[in-house]
Length: 69
Image 1 (cartoon, rainbow, N blue to C red):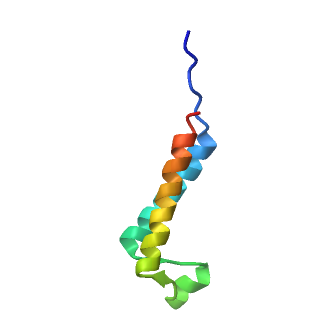
Image 2 (tube, rainbow, N blue to C red):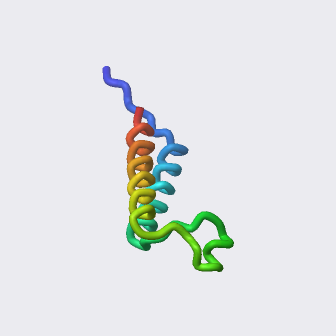
């Protein structure tokens, strides 16, 4: 008799959110720290945004993988 794995939907939600933010950082090329930096046009761009986007995507995939345990 096999046990069915349960999915933790909270981890799936967090993982999806991290994937979305990471994809936005990769494709947009900029990460905003707060709402004020959006209005002023100041944010983290270039290579730093790509690194942050990659980290967020990696964390999102990790959370989604861990949700099935």
